[in-house]
Length: 129
Image 1 (cartoon, rainbow, N blue to C red):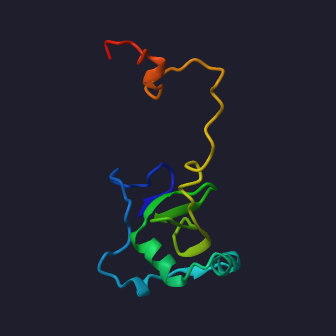
Image 2: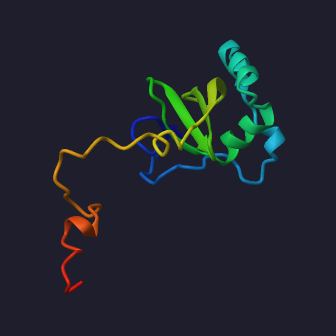
């Protein structure tokens, strides 16, 4: 039995309970009741029942953003369920690259600092280098 209270979810004995499902259970046998919202999201986001069963079986469990919800994460797919993990609420593909393609902030007016400044700012024109 797990509680939804901290990140990641802890079992009653205090150990991390990240992969709660039976590893010997066939993925196709993992039960998941669809809400109307989840059915719509699966269709519009092209996420199959089998993918969600895989996420529920193999994914890591974390507390959801709303009370009494659990977030199952496997690869780039996220499944949000009720606290019992029996009823699916929504699902989506996580876009982990969203920050990679963002333009860096304009720092032309700021002095360089930290480990990311280039050597040209640190005196690379010095003949000793």
